[in-house]
Length: 318
Image (cartoon, rainbow, N blue to C red; front, side, top):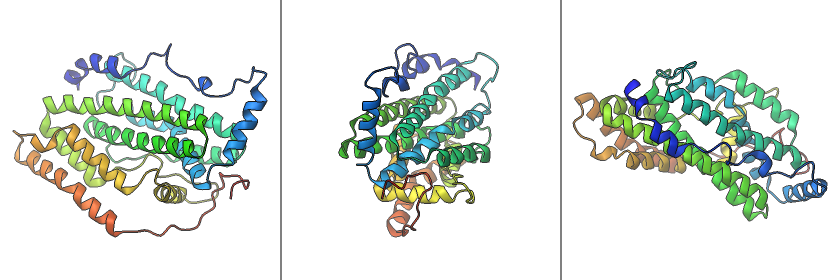
């Protein structure tokens, strides 16, 4: 990891935004000091009623996922090679990434608060549960597995926010579409950084990376909010309903999972990696075969959606 750390400065410079000039939540929301503030909020609330119930559920679920940032930072900072109190490039990246990610939950939370159609207390309870329940993506402190996971997950969040932006625009909510679009762009930039980290690792330790990649995909990529629950409900139940909603609406589907997997295979040119050990080659072969298997299963399994009314959403929405 020390050798890899030395290669990071150009990557960080390319994929890190300028704090002084980058967007902040206040750039995308009504200004409380403006004489037009109340009129702007009334317009927001009117547009909120034009959005579908399913779109609101996915937006709230995405917000809760973003709001659980303390859990994700605590997990990444424990990866081997990240100096929690030092000044190495890994710790610099993590702090910068955390600051950029923090804006996502911040702007979405404020938007939901002003929308008038969200039960904020219930949403806040779910968020606190999600942080308290923790997060176990199954990779321990292995940095290779961490970066495979984050490469995949950042693309997945890009897809989710980008699609939410599209559906919001279709409903006439240009402001929300812009917010989700800005977040999606951040997530893609972060994904590109993590993808580049993996490319650097492949130059130095292709065997180790291939074995880690295969292990992560064999286990499956666990979504960050997989423990999501509503008040008075068991752990993970709300996430199942949220996932069903996102799948049915088309915000994030099983086929997106396969598409992201295929994209990473191409990004890292896994098909053409050579010079591996017998174990590494076996892992490469398994990695290459798995997307087709997942797709076949996804095509066969059509899970019926169970009726569920989320406590997060106001009765104003049918």
